[in-house]
Image (tube, rainbow, N blue to C red; front, side, top):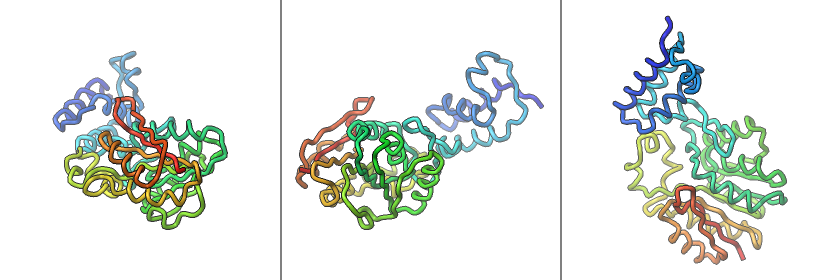
Length: 277
């Protein structure tokens, strides 16, 4: 039986509105494109367009109404121009993190540098850097075997050449690096329950929890990275919008210099970088 796309979209918008989904129009059209093979542009050109097989789309809308992240439903998230496979094994890549990758790639350029991505998750930072910095050698680590399995799948899918290591921070890491980059867990423990359901329920807590003050991993990584960075090497972190001052103090305490804080497109502090002298 043929069904008007217009009717499906309106019904789906109503379902997501009742579920208090904020970006429901964007979500509905993304789901329509994937599961109905109909884009908003198709609909605007022909408002009377119809489809016959609607079950997969309606199931997807029901999942979204249950606050399952859109990316877990579609199975993909674009990051730095690359489509990464995503699921509950690792944190869904955020667009804000692209600022971190851009700053590292601007620093590395086409030089033959060795890069370590710590707490790699989906592998998005490491793989994007591997693709963008053609002469760099990228190593990535995570404590989670599940995250590393997902990152390995993305490495193969995107034709990258990242070396993945299962390691509790630096325990299994060897050699010296020109760059160490990390988007570590940085949410305060007692603030996790205040996050939107899509994050607190469906993203791994291991990838979120930065301990009582959110700064645990900045302290540990900064302390150890001194022994793994070459002289003149740089460390790059993603940070929370209100963490620049605290992380700067941590870096200064371990002897790093040339500390720079970089804002994201929303004007929030997002990246901090420093040099080992």
